[in-house]
Length: 559
Image (tube, rainbow, N blue to C red; front, side, top):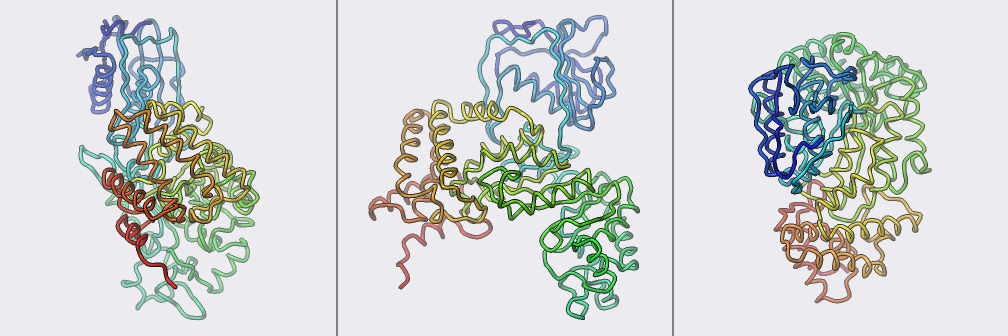
């Protein structure tokens, strides 16, 4: 069936329900179809069941026009179907309908959603839909966040089917905060602030070395404290009634309570999560319609030998210590995490995983972890992970940030997707004629990492990495020379290549792999120029700015 035939069409876009979600959907379709084909499809005022042919119908559940197979869409699923000359895009919710529209544009019009500021829009004169086409998609993971500054933008987040971005649109206004979350994490002192309670109720707080302290945790087995925390949480919930997830979780310190009751529960569980879960279960019982989240992190990281959990509790499990050179399930360095997630898999059908996907100590330095992303995500899903926070770069940019965002988003929606197809689609759309050389660079560096047999730490340094050895640099550089030559007449594509080349230049400068002062100054000038062009701010999380990094390169060596 030809939807568009030589830049023209007899189709119209129609919505049985005239509501905000469908109004948004028809405009998305009309806008992008026109950009791709130069054909402006009209929007029908009414939908008549007797004249559905040659229409794109967009609808939100419950559906006014039934299509077989539209059950079990969950909260965010959608269906794209062709039946008797009509195209249907049907969503379980407003978000599901929006996701379906962007998926339809990807599949049939060839659009690729690159960044918050850029789409890839091809030009086509004809678009065909297979007769009887039916595609039903329901996300495997309920909560999906890729924590890059780029994906905080609500527009790119919904194009990539992410639902946990740091900002979102509500009532046509931009709202800051994790969507659907009341508290995010480390909330003990939000619920029971020590400045309000410690003087009058020191017993609410952790017993450390025989003394109650106001710079540690709560005494998680103190029932009076728990009752007060529940009352306080009710007030917070009244301020954010739409929030589904509420974190009741430890502070970012190890000073946990060692009172007799807390210690007994921890010993029985074989983990400090034992006393925490006592507290969390009580809160979950008070709010059965909410999801109560808690951390398995740092001192509570060890999975319990046995534990009881309410159905609306989920565990936020962190794998900060895992090596990223090989897939987690086959990596001996990740043995303890594999054991722990297997235990949680038995007790909790809703594990929230806090994963780490970049190099935090050197945000720009090459970090060849792309080959482990898909096998890791499959492993997570098969061990009850149903929510994921992919922690990446809170700063601007970083090593191949656009590609990593795209792939993590695709995997978060469907861990079993054809990730190589998505990878090639993105490379071709983002880099144009330079794509084959960028592909060679990434694959070659991954090969060199594998040859070393060494690990890949999220807190590593380029001077310590054998895959960044000096003898390999001419080969890596050659790929960027070819990539830049391929796009030398396209300033936008050239800058994209140069932004990713900055990672290699950073490694050379940081590890002092240059051969002369002249080469060093040339590399520094390149780094400065490109950093300014892409508005790069920091090369290390939280603190080391571009200026600080470049200035340090000219400091005299200490004796």
